[in-house]
Amino acid sequence: MKSDLTEEHFSNCLMCNIDLMESQIPYMIEKAFKRGPDGSLMTIFEFAICMDCAQKTQNQLSRESLANIQRYFNERKDLFLRNEELFDKEELEFEQWIDECVLSGEKIGECEEFQVLVTCQGDQMEMGIFPYMISGKEAENMQELLSEKTKDEMDDFMNTHLDLPPELKMLLEDSSTFVLV
Ligand SMILES: [Zn+2]
Image (cartoon, rainbow, N blue to C red; front, side):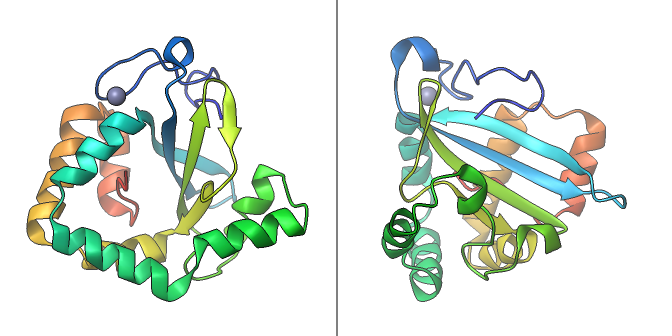
């Protein structure tokens, strides 16, 4: 999956800056979108993070927050089962995997805001637990499950690593989407 900004593959990890193409280290891409009045999509933020850094970031989050998110997911969707179902139906197109919110089932066309998580290696997208889409509404629900400490840590992450221009920062503050790593 390419960057919407550069229209190239993401070249470096947001945190450690490792070369994602050369190292062939697995990585995750996260993008958040908002739909304009005319239905067009605007990218609020996008980044790639190598799995080592994603793991480190997760390890910093409070156990309680992680457990809450895990429970919330498990109650709504068995991602392993979804994976099997999609492969059984031979639905191997990326668009089919993000066609509806993995938590609520809301269709992507009806989501005013949503975020997409994808795993890749080199220039190849991997189909497994990812990719999936989370609607803005569900992103909001998930944020309510996080401890204040975790929320602060995520804000820090955004401020430290995502160098967003002021207009996108405002858009992000107004939106329900947040960094999920
Ligand atoms: Zn990294």
